[in-house]
Image (cartoon, rainbow, N blue to C red):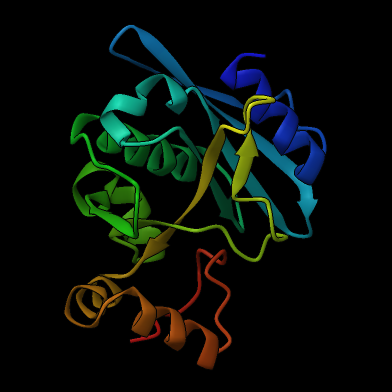
Length: 188
């Protein structure tokens, strides 16, 4: 089984069917990354899921794909997601731990103006079931990863830089903030 098929099987097992009307595509370095919308996996949420980042495991430091759950989806949101994936590849960012990219105020200013989110963070997926973050790739036991991306305000990025992701995550929990909600207020 190829990596794309393994990830697609994994996604459909946990998320159901994707919406064939929404497929974004990013060409990079001779290969392509697609982003699919699993619109019915969670109520009032579009779960955007990449297929094709596995082609760039040397750049990213591991066999990995990303999911981006968002509360609403239109061309501006899709552009912000695709720009974040493009930056990830262009900057050759590894995803072993919490990683963030601060670029949205420049790369997709309409998104920044609408949602007041300037950065994109990658972390372990939640609130997904245990096991969702690991993808069985072969019968020999090789495992790929699924990372989750979501958007941060500038103040949240500063807290992340100063105190670390655990402090930021604690704020989200204490304030019962849904990070999927693009229109949520900053926790800082």
